[in-house]
Image (cartoon, rainbow, N blue to C red; front, side):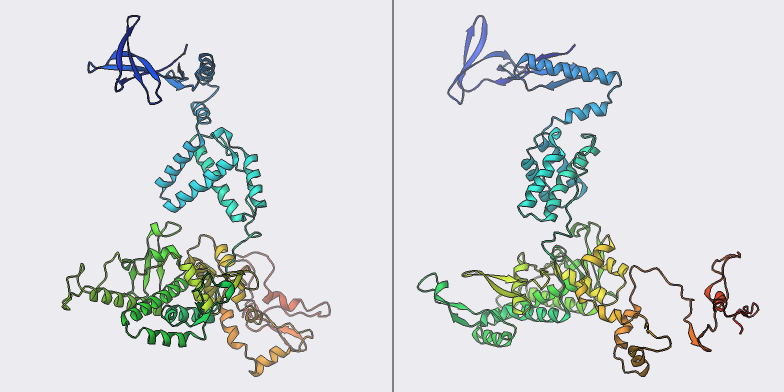
Length: 602
């Protein structure tokens, strides 16, 4: 039989406590922090000093579980009868385990139901950290899970149910939350429940049947790829705009925008057409400060090289920001960079090849960066101070680029100057940037990765190769999300389709133009002819085109008379054999094929 009792513990005598004797028992008397008089029995500790005895306010149940092990469980009850009711339930469960009605794992699962959900979440985050997830993912998971737990009112693991979660998601949808964001909340709480199943805390996931929102039908941010002309303008603006900012003209500010008596003018925005003139004015204004001119030119060169690297490698912003000198191999053929697994999104680590021109730009950039670092160590008399590394080479852990945290805002200003985006007045005196096209798609830093994928498809790269270059796990993501069909040469691809004249024996105008050499689509057909065809089964190359000769009778020169199967069977022969026998009912004297020569005889 089990029992319930209140635990006791000993503590040193409080400061200022007096020892009194009441009914033959020694007691300690003192004033606590709430200005209340307290008394407690005194006992002698192991070291021989007096200590007070503190009794817990709640009862603890003590019993033997199904395995015969003595267990002590805090009931949380101050009433003894309520504590004994909990003890009875625990002893009943122990008897069912002993009678093999319940397993030990099922019995432990019942205990987990009353544990606060916050404790399960912290244990789940420790599991994710041990698995190697990034700090950003851990913070996002904690934030998303806590918000949906608080919104649904879940306190314990037993409280997690499907209906409150569905109602919460529907409420967020009515408030305008995007489908992808709602799925992120659902994934956070569902991942916690899946982990509870793996660790024996839950038998089934109560949220497993909740359907995800359709992200394709509710896309809030649709990115588009930049054209080649837009990329050239963007790189030109990024290189020159930092210096050209110092050559902007001033214009009077409208009275409605003035905030004070002295607020009468403002800087005129830069435009692509005024970029040359603004750069010349900046050089004239900063003629006495050549160091600032050199710094702005270096900053512009770095920004342009950042954009170029993102477009020609498909790196994400975080991956580029973590790139160090030691991860670049620029002397190999071809040059490449090595991404550490800790810095990559899929945590696998990759080797990314580099174009020859990009490798040359990076090589020159690092050389100039090393030279600038060498010059920065010169003393006041021009003497070169000792470098931390031998020679002018940069340390291996030096970052290749100083990628700014607000790169998206810098890109916005570059897009406006390049004429790719435009400034719009959102409210009186409040301006914003509109980067959307006619289909509502926008441009941001990650759109440069979309541009990389689109340029691969536009250049005729095979889908499997493009998937490897993009480092995607699924080819659908490469072909459908990161490929902009608007920039693909669909018209040129259509021109590669076969000619289908309405009258047999009469060629269409396009075929006649190709025969006479007046059609200018031959160059366009060359690349699509070698590009892969998606979604179509392979066509056997031995099937020959039929040429209309001898009064419209089909003749196939050089066709091999073989069967459709690789082994000897009495099966129908191929088109090359059956063709002569399919001339219609009027042909009563078909000629069999010449078995010896393997060709058709007339």
